[in-house]
Amino acid sequence: MKTVAVDSEKTLETAARLRLVMVRLARALRHQGSTALSPSQVSALASVDEFGPLRISALAALESVGAPVATRVVASLEELDLLTRTDDPDDKRASLVELSEHGHEVLSAIWSERTIGLSSRVERLTSAERSRLELALPALEKLAREN
Image (cartoon, rainbow, N blue to C red; front, side, top):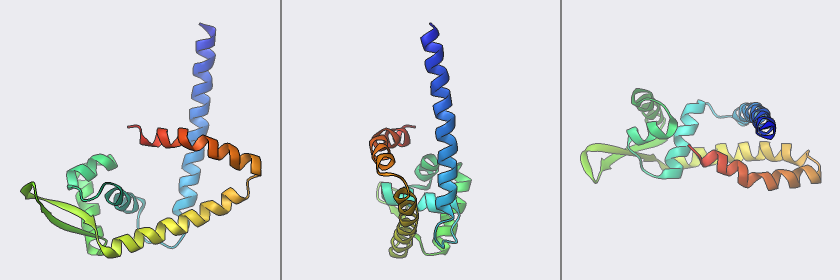
């Protein structure tokens, strides 16, 4: 029974450290580059890029926000010509949002800037640290996919 408590304590400590590291890295990456978009706007663009044309309700679920928030984010991205709306072929009462050509270009530029910024941080690690990071990536990717 004592082993379970120690394992649970260790898991909590690991989770707390991981949370703090993720918050700090996310903050550093958000400040990388010159985008005027909010984190919510960038996240919405990334979701639409990853999952293809989406209803606003599906985007809201993916982003863990309410429909009114998703609607405002989509409207702001439409104004910037980053998203476009099309009729949903399955339901003419609904619409789908998808990245515009400009949206693809902007998102690609954001990812490039942030990847270069993170790459410079990774390069400052020792070879052994980079190897351990590479070994941890599958577990981190699994955590990121779980809902």
